[in-house]
Image 1 (tube, rainbow, N blue to C red):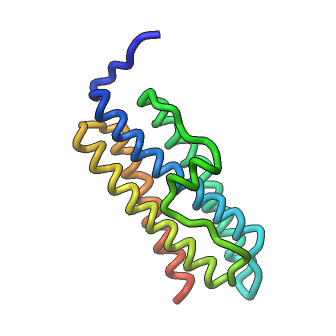
Image 2: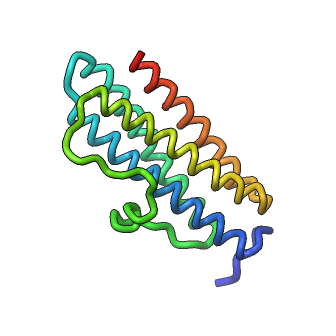
Length: 156
């Protein structure tokens, strides 16, 4: 096996990968939360929310794979256990089954947190001239900003 040489210094790759690990943990935690809410939502807007949550967790399932693969591309092992995700994530797990309105609020906050985490990783990628990570993270930000907006719109 040869050393990786993709034009990004090793120290920068490691910093970026650490940031991506946090983004992966936030995204995976949000995926689990969204899937949980899809299974357990009730109330007047049951069908609408259930379908919206399904769209969201399906999109997040692809996202976590993309993020993990970028970490591997940088030659760093991707985290893959609940224990690691719980340690790395800034999104906390929810106890019990919240009301449908609270589910929407919690998911809105989760998507907004992923945007904030993405902004931190984006700065690292830009400083290291890592366009591939910057593009991935920028795309993630756009998706999470739009999803948060859509969730907020359901509460008006």
